Amino acid sequence: MTRSSAPGKVYLFGEHAVVYGEPAVPCAIERRARVGVEPRDDATLRVHSDDLSLDGFTVEYSGSTTGTPDIDVAESLVDAAMGYVDEAIGQVRDVTGDTETGFDVTIESDIPLGAGIGSSAAVVVAAIDAASRALGVELSTDELAERAYRTELAVQDGQASRADTFCSATGGAVRVEGADCRSIAAPDLPFVIGFDGGAGDTGALVAGVRQLREEYDFAAETIESIGDIVRRGERILADGDVEELGELMDFNHGLLSALGVSSRSLDSMVWAAREAGAHGVKLTGAGGGGCIVALDPTPETATALRYLPGCEEVFRAELATDGVKRLE
Ligand code: PMV
Image (cartoon, rainbow, N blue to C red; front, top):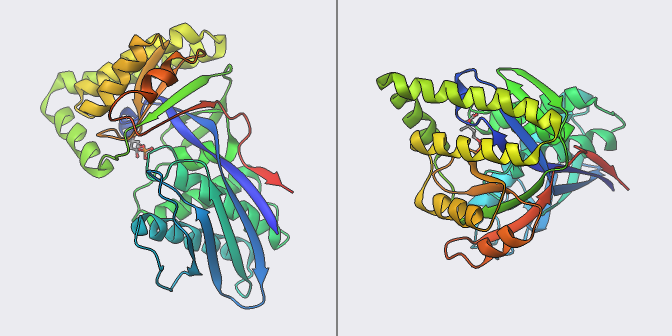
């Protein structure tokens, strides 16, 4: 079996503003999806995963992409994961020119699904890397990121940013501005992530911000101010001043909140983390529900979130300096 792993990500700064050409800084986190592939004699794709879990449910799925899963929980999540793997293998067929070989694919992931922290990008990056290597082709990191981006674009009906897939392929901190993605220097970042068990509707949240921006100059200025935070944040990252980074994260959250993309549960996790002494904390991703990310080297924030009603899951994760990893 050929196996690869790839990390999930959080946004340190800049989500939403990135849609209007401002820079953003996503960071890979040491929570990974691992994908193993075994070439088959026929062209069939079979996917097996016994830990695509969410909310404590463990979903067992084993079948072809055209089969009906014999499960009754989180079916749509499994279907979604299957769609990503199917398209990822399509990209591998395209890049290797081998359309005859099928695969048995095994997925293990410790990134909560559907939580806005890049689980699909991690599965896609690891799947493309493992399957292309199984066919004797080693893709460069740029080619891998590009193929993973095309996979997300196809599955998400043309709505995908390069941030998740690039960050998962390269690891570390990344600066994204339009189609320009590159790695930037960053110190150790002790993240604590809180998940409220929900997810916002990204399309609706992006549309809401667009409307505010068209209606009010001060909303447009808020978006530009987020860009200013990102530009300052990049310099602070290079200096390694974690306390000032935290201050900027707090500011970024306030501006996202002003743009209407926070929620009661996100705000209550943000306040619990702040009161526990985190250097800084903000929502990550589209908002409306989902995850917050706090910067805190002590155990206090994780403990406070663990006992907070409405916080379904909490975990610590360092910045993942490695992106895709080739496993034995
Ligand atoms: O929730 P995520 O991780 O898919 O991030 C969405 C980020 C937005 O800036 C809100 C939208 C985008 O496509 O950049």
